[in-house]
Length: 489
Image (cartoon, rainbow, N blue to C red):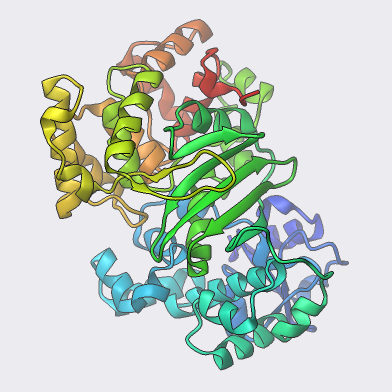
């Protein structure tokens, strides 16, 4: 979008928050870059130039605005609605792969050369993978400086910097303040009650309807791994350097997030996965406008706009749970998953609630005795085949997954039909166009609304909803009285 100068200027002059994260405005006279909704008086159009990423602004010598704090804007929705190389690379960078494995590790995960990845990122984002990772480190550093009482040396390494000098130089360059000056601007705060506990706000583009989002996560919560407590969704997280517990509660203009981490280096990855699980980088206005073009779907959208697709923090975990949920009720699926968690999950301590385990890894599940599974023989074969192939890497589910390739791999497994594959594509892989025409709830809703309700006819009608059919699924499911559609009391 940053190449459409006229459209960008209009967005800045109207302070349109919907475009925050889509592009950044750099002011030539002040050498500052802002989000489109910056509250200051907009600069003259001839003094504006536009960049597709904060990293590109920083590489061009601009520093972040102290008023609108562009580093805290929602992420671009582009990276969660596309499956090309650039989008997959951006999802991996957000997941901390460059900080842990370097650019060669990023290239290996994507199956391309480092030169090709750098060339494509530079062409589309104006910055290479190292610059993009550096911008993310700066954002993480600022978050730790402002929300914790950690010493600066610990913050530097927790944010992914290789040295304290690099940390100091980067913070000064990006924010025009030293790390100590950034902290001095804030009121004094006491140390958190729990070691490693961090409290922050996750921004999103309005509107956001929390009912089906948190309702789905709470209604399908696996005991020991997830729970709904005191108006918030809580779950355990398996992270690269350790584990964590996150508490997420919907607020009118943000998601309140409390993270307790065994290793604070996992902060950027934990934030990225929570944002992805809650679909916080979506553009609800664009999605809802497209779905409203269908006169039979429009009333559902108008009644409760801003529905998101509830996703996951662990793609392999969700695939396992999707198999456990085949042809059984939500309660039965939770029971099956809870037994696996108790028997094969890694135990953790939770001082604030009732969480007890991390969800088992594919490796742990591949080693179990199939006869111990209380399920029909055919589904037992489906389960054991899936976990074995996840464990040995034959099937890999992750932020970098190629959606068509993974679909083909899953369909080749015994017991995997279109419904299971599309549920995994929608909620684990994040495909915004995944569709479930054979789902009983979808067919029932279609019949009640006067839409075609046979799978073939409904698929043909849904072609007009593309590329947002996964969001149409949420609106159709919402016509039912199932607990997934309501915030728990």
